[in-house]
Amino acid sequence: MISRNLRHFRVFLAAVDLGSATRAAEACRISQPAATQALQRLGRDSGGALFERSRDGIEPTPRGAVLAARIRRGMDRLDAALAEIAPRLVLTATSAQLSALSAAAEAQNFTLAARALGLAQPTLHRAVARLEREAGRPLFERTASGLVPTRACRDLAQATNLAFAEFDQAEADLAEFDGRESGRIVIGSLPLGRSVVLPEALARFRALRPNQLVTVIDGPYDEMLGQLRRGRIDVIFGAMRDPLPIADIVQEPLFSDHLTVVARPGHPLAGAGTVPLDRLGHHAWAVPRPGTPSRAQFDEAFDRRGMSLPQGVVECGSILLMRELLVRSDMLGCISGQQAGAELQRGLLVRIDVGVDWPARAIGLTHRAGWVPTAAQALLLDEIRAAAPAQPPLAFDR
Image (cartoon, rainbow, N blue to C red; front, top):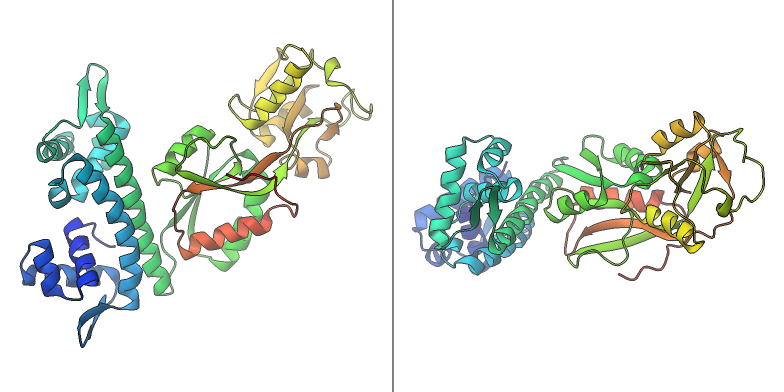
């Protein structure tokens, strides 16, 4: 494991840029032996030599170049946020202090933040207080309801999270360099993804990378978007948002999808031909949760016809739960056609034609702007693209 010693990272990048440990020491205002020791420690942590000697000094080995690319991305982001608060912080802030600040900003409580990091509360409090002293201003407002991070504090916590995500990716890059599988890939999966495309993509990926750790997280879009932006999730797969919810993410459409209405086999409406939606307002429905693109389309279909929304509604995004509700009742379900595909093919559900021309929805990948995936992450993304239905994606130029 690479120790997240920010001073060592600065010395390393200076040595890469200046081609000399001596000049790196001067630039970082430390002794030459201290610089040499920092570079040796980082080399041991990284699993091999980071520099080789040349006629003009030292230059990074291929391993060193791999590490430098990741470390520079993280440090550039971090230093910009530190300098915005106080230039002195660029020289004095430590990774432990920044971890404490990030946890406190998220929990808005020192005790909960300390618990999340496995620290004693006084230890975490001292780390944040030290940062505030160096900054020359408070980074939290203490209120009766808890800690409220200032705008500068939120920006620094965000930069810390993303910088640390880059450092995690550095570990994976070095493992790849040595032919090992390391690190964790975290996929945020919306309902369509986890029932159709992701299982196929993950099976293909596992055959290629049998030891790579992959975590699939599901939940509401807004929660996963926050985790994505903090570097806790690498990519989200599922229905895209239009308009783009925030400018620091990128959406890649893979295919388009339409809603469909489903019911149990033997339902009174099964095989009845087209049943206008106007006749179905009194039925009980299982529909997606509010705030999702699917639910917006469902609500709009009733609104366009001047109809009130059905009263007997169960809100859920899981095809498994919806299926079990439908087979036990005469409820109707409204869900993604792709998501319900397996249930329809197996005869577990049947499609009900309600005469609605449902608008197409773009389904695809969402990641942070400027994100550079590791080799393993890129391979999994390729497998998701390959497992997506072979149809032209909805035009989605965002």
